[in-house]
Image (cartoon, rainbow, N blue to C red):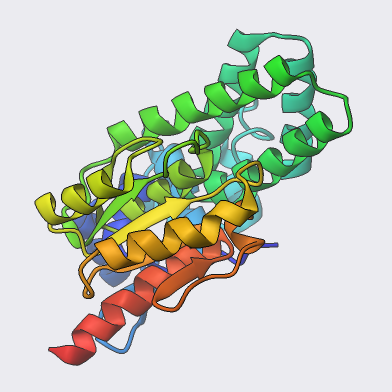
Length: 305
């Protein structure tokens, strides 16, 4: 189970739709949320407080007054939800239930229902929780269904295309990160799988990073030129489990040599986990590792100021 990280105030604003000024006013007036402070003195919010803020925001949108909501217990907040939303909105839908539903809808080839189920889950949970707690295990379940012969190739493709479309739309609706670092995301030639990179991009943009996506199958020299043109701090590439493992090391070594020394090279994906990682490259084994690597990069730059 992935432990959801604390969020800074900008990330909470993007994730919940609540403005920074609103969060600060509520903190003073109602004593909630109760952020802690990082070692730079900036507010950080535990995941459980962000979940409660999402619920309060939904209830305010339904017409409830903030003062009443902040005085309510968890049980009372659940009771305030309208009957049609009491189960689906107030109680987070278990990932296992959504996995089963998704597999069933893919097998039934019911694309409209599949898109609706995934979209509703994303809206209920918030984008970060959806990616961390649903998409990751769902990808694994779909992959296992394909390997076990339960899914045909076209059914696995059906799921993947719907999820990619959903995440791209979600990224497009997010306010541009605009902050540091500047991260270039792509795959190397003959690597067509991009879903993992899209998931990472969601988390990076939510945390305020500037992401430049080149899509898939970018020649190495073009990755080099794009990194220079966009003044990238980091280049992130991904290798799926289907990519030939013997090619990973030579490609990474060549790409590392092409990039300027100050530009970090991050690599993730199942294919990268099975290969030897050259020196000077950060191997990210999970989505949590992406979040941790971003925090490490920022801390190293602050320490150097």
